[in-house]
Image 1 (cartoon, rainbow, N blue to C red):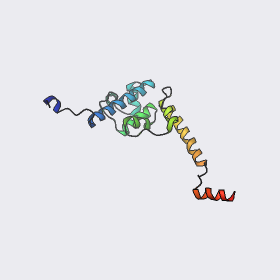
Image 2: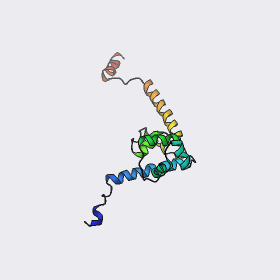
Image 3: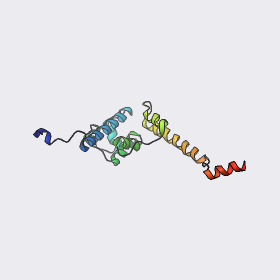
Image 4: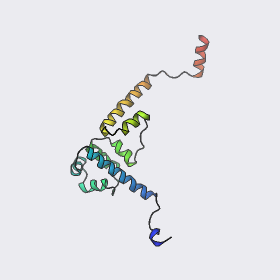
Length: 147
């Protein structure tokens, strides 16, 4: 191994993954800010984060904490959960093909997506609560005998 390669981390190592996450979240924040037509300076004021720090986040130089992400989400008027998922803090929520389709729709804002997902999930919970419990094998046998 040469001296030039000895001090470099192996490709795909933990430090590289952290850098990728920071870059991904920064790009996502920049994209959301652009969609909302908010300048970097405006977002820094809305989120209560310094302009240079926010710039570093967007460029992937810094990986923000969950608290900073929450402040940025408020400034962008999107769900903090969306930023947590992008940052790798939370796993992508499940919800099947409908939830996936809503999240993938590029025509909707993050806020619109979240509202749709909330309504969809509330309908699913309501319907699940209204369903009769499935019959146990013993109950099914009894109903056949009485028929």
